[in-house]
Image (cartoon, rainbow, N blue to C red):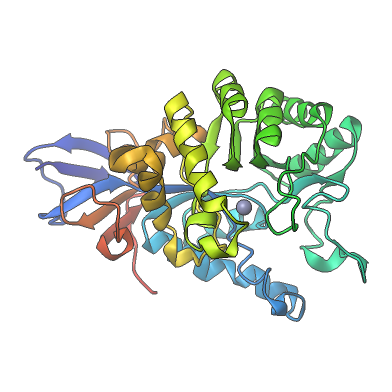
Length: 369
Ligand SMILES: [Zn+2]
């Protein structure tokens, strides 16, 4: 039993028998740090549905509002958006027009011609209107264009640079492609680093794409469904994180290429065994945002165990996002992002049903959904 004392947006003391101006009784509950989702898409809820092109652009922008509220109510207090949201979301949050977790943005995924960011249909050609026209062009070829693409993202307010090194599972049979050269990836990393030390998150499913990205200096590999020993060794050498986003294969194993669910679990286990740091990312809305905490369950089951799965969603995620000086633990001086869970054990199954109270920046979150 211990008390946590909050003043303003900070935790100021943790220990037994302390008092504050107001008391919230959390007896029989477990207090954990606010959760951090390192890979989500808060602005893509409608994107994959047939109505995506049938509604005014503002509908996409407004769709972010309930998503952020949903995440906050589930104890998610920081997210890294892995493409789709623009920097205006941050201004709306800072101005208090909407409530939600703190959002780091990557804007659009950088991709080469024919890569996953190159929206093109045989019968229509280039789909210029398929993403927000205010977001920068993300398709490039060659190291010089790669640098220009990074500069466009920085100009538009990107906190992180997102890169697509392999195909996607939705690009029929192209998930194993390495869609970028080593020179192109290295140019992106170098350019990002020169701009305020920005870091690079790399979408990569296949071992060869992961290995090349790690060698080019990627800071986190996203997905990593098909890893092998060389890929994992390159990640260890580079000190690179893995954000497995297990929800994409574990929540609906039938909807993926045959064997992907097993391969993904095997890859995560291989990375854990080799000492690759793991951080939590849901990749929602692949699954509804209401299911965000299921990713912690998947991480635990894939070999992390319950304690480390919690850490992957708190302190280790904070380390990846370089905010561990400020959050990720319930210690004095850190931001008062706190989740009170019903029950006192570290059970990871059914977490969303155990949320009692959430505090974000020291403020209690009111539940609306
Ligand atoms: Zn994603």
